[in-house]
Length: 78
Image (cartoon, rainbow, N blue to C red):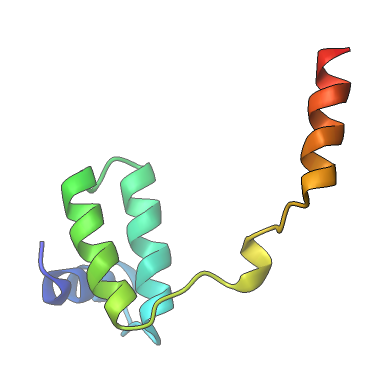
């Protein structure tokens, strides 16, 4: 699937144009999870969107400190 095909598919489903590459990134992730895209299609589209600046919001990622990992490891082995 090409990026152009992805945009057309997005427009058919959502009945509007995508506002940003981030929106398309969310869409392909959901499509992959639901089995609508193969891993090969997902990777190709992901790298194309990444080139266009698509990113997840910074709140999506949680920074883990080493102390958190050590505490979790110790408490889970008790």
